[in-house]
Image (tube, rainbow, N blue to C red; front, top):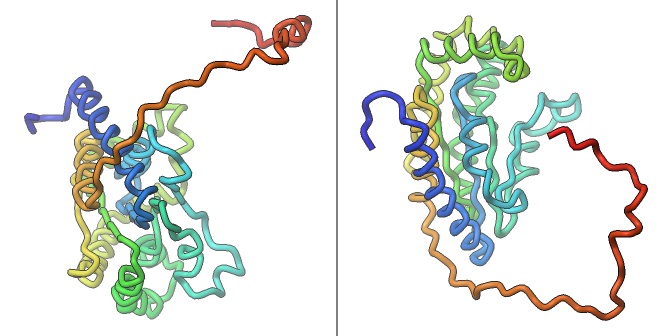
Length: 263
């Protein structure tokens, strides 16, 4: 695939279909092997996390690929150990959990917006590699991806949200604050990478100005990171329908309320 300009829709659709087939093979292997994987997706607002998650999960079971985008913590959760509310959603055998933003909120938005103290921020950066090593030593595969969007592209996407009623729900007051504080978020990103990009739990960065290319590259990286194998399955054959107690199941619907066929 040529890398000049944005990836064409026709090429993207063709490659996405191939990669979604592989995700289905991965799903079969995860279920049969008891694999437990956590995928952390981070990046600035409008970096493309939502589109990546949709492309990744569109053709697989939500019981295997479980997605969590946790809301702001409750008053009770604020008194818990910081990582506690995330660990509640960690995978059991045969599951892949995808965090659309994760415990790294503390390294990003909480730090920049003043939702945590400087001491809490520093403590998080110091303890995070230790906790992640504990998670990995416990048998969970941890994959961390940072989507890196450029300043001009982020602005273009925000403007598209403002002008498009279908996308306006994506634009929150927090998005506007993050737009205003670009350089503060850049510094927070660099501090996070400096402290938490380790050999045990590395970060992998995906350039996401081209959303289509970013989705394919991120999913290909995940597939390359997990050593899955294709599982041989017997071809499914539909059984013959039983005609015992044959029943006219259409007549009882006559006179019922049907939706108007507008299309």
